[in-house]
Length: 78
Ligand SMILES: [Zn+2]
Image (cartoon, rainbow, N blue to C red; front, side, top):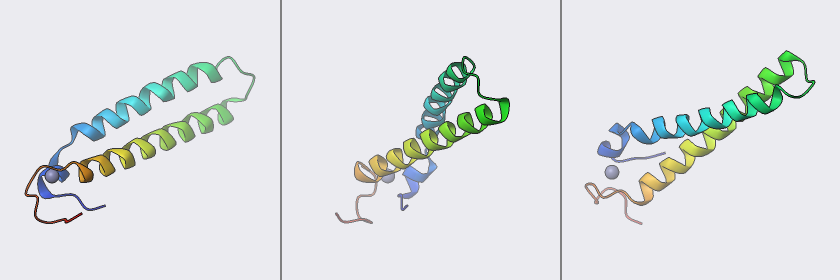
């Protein structure tokens, strides 16, 4: 994961990714609360969803930031 110096300093894409992941996690938690799974399984499922969603989103954000970086422009040739 290589980003230019300016891009690697930006934090909002990660906050955004974690916010979305948080919303997905909350919805999952609410849905799971209607099931008859025991508490441990529910926590595991919810944690799994959060890790999956946050991981995917952060990965996607990094890919986009690398692809559309408008900074120094010299370091990474396509
Ligand atoms: Zn950049």
